Structures are given as C-alpha cells and as structure tokens.
Image (cartoon, rainbow, N blue to C red; front, side):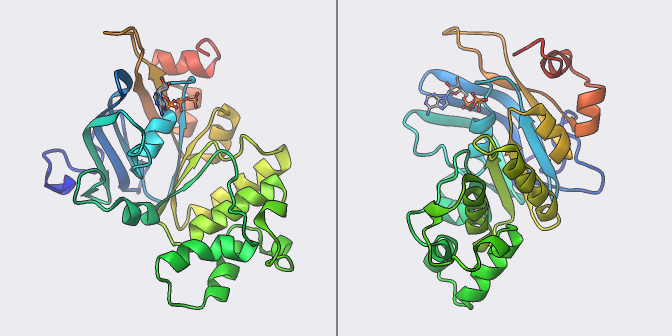
Length: 281
Ligand SMILES: Nc1ncnc2c1ncn2[C@@H]1O[C@H](COP(=O)(O)OP(=O)(O)OP(=O)(O)O)[C@@H](O)[C@H]1O
C-alpha cells in the first residue's frame, strides 16, 4: 500500500508538525520507531518535512537526529540490528519496503556528511561520478560546471579540475561533496552536521549556499549549533530523550516541530525551552 493510501495522508499528519505556510510535505514520518538491536533510538516520531524549505533537526546528543535523517534515504539499512516500525514517505510513496530500490531513492534523496569525503579522484571526476554511474547521457562538462557553480565552487576550482579533490581545503571539499550530490539532481538534500568540521568562513559559505539552494531543493540539516539552526532554517524539529523504559535506555522522541522563529522565541514544549536555554545539555 502506498503511503497515499494510508488513513493518514502525507500532508500534515500530526498537529505537532505544521507545514510552513504554502509548503506541502515532501518527506513524512508517521509514528516512526527505530531500534539498533535492543537499543531503541527513536519512539513514535511523526513529522512532515515541507518542500523547498530548510528544516533543522536539533536536540541533545543521542536523541536520534542522525537516525531520523538517515531513515529518509535508507542509510541505516546496512547497520546490523537496525529495525524500524511505522511509516516513512517520500512524495507520497513509501521509503521502506522491498519494492523500493534504495539506490534510486538515494539518487532523489541525496546526503552530505559531517566530514567532507571526496573520492581520491580529480575534482572533475568527483562531480561526474554519480551522473556517470546513473547513465547520464548529456554533456558531462556542462553538468560538472553547472554543479560546481550551484555549489558556489566553480570560480575557485575552474583551473584545478584535474587536481585531486583531496587537495582542496576542508570547506572547498565540503562544497565539492555538495556539488557531487547536486550533479545527480536530487530533490532533497540531507545534511548531517555539514559544517562541524569547517572554520567559520567556510561555514558561512555553506550556509549561504543552503539559502540559495532551497529554491530548488528541500534541505534537512542536523546541527548541534543552535545559532546555525536559527540562521539557516525555516522549520526546526527539537528531539529529546524520553524517559527510560525496559533496558534503561532513553529513546529519542519529537518534542516540538515549529517554524524556527516560533521555536526559538516562544517554544510550546517545556523540554524545548529547557534545551534551547541550556538547561538540558
Ligand atoms: N550504528 C549504531 N549501532 C548501535 N546503536 C546506534 C548506532 N547508531 C546510533 N546508535 C544509537 O542510537 C541512538 C541515537 O543515535 P544518533 O546518532 O541517531 O543520535 P544523534 O542525536 O544524532 O546524536 P549526536 O548528536 O551525538 O550525533 C544513540 O543511543 C546511539 O548510541
């Protein structure tokens, strides 16, 4: 059964998850629970991520931010002991299940990781690689230039296309990874702490880039940096550690999902307030 056929439709499945004005939901989790072996990482998370917006996931360490992010493009599938219950949807179709090809899904829902991870190949090949393996038949030179321009990197590397991607600075490497993601023309970009290994100037460049990209893409970012969440995101989801049950482990739950300015000024949930004011670490 596709997610559209479920009793709760993919648009705004929960009162805790209002879509931004004028935006519809592109990624949906409905009553999502996740385990790694006997450790429950998430419990009962329902959220609708609006299209063409930047959504930040914040919350204390271990509350399941990365787990939730990685569920949206099935990056957890290969982790031993990973198991999930509930529903996940992308554009009204299921994300999980044997009928979904994770490779196709990951082409449409791309990911940028915490540590820049270019291949030990030229700048050009780093960008062209994904398009090549996906059978791109257009002009690769044009695609590489377009992707590097969109990632605000072209001017810095146009004379270095045959140099190793590993020779670039950390900030340039991260934008190269973003260009590599853009080259396969995804609809969603998941970013897992994309600036945590970058200096403030490189961080600002990536943040500016995110703002430019949201006209064409939906972006979901995990960040530990609440200032960054305030600067870049339209919507913020605050996850929290729930009370311990069973084996004493505390799973992550969604405390609040609100427009970013609301969440940081007038949070509805006392746990959110405690977190953003530093009373929960
Ligand atoms: N590969 C794994 N195997 C077993 N347990 C895991 C694995 N990845 C995460 N976990 C557990 O799942 C829970 C949620 O982890 P996750 O990394 O999603 O949280 P997080 O909020 O992103 O944390 P952080 O802010 O520290 O990066 C934690 O208890 C963590 O120990």
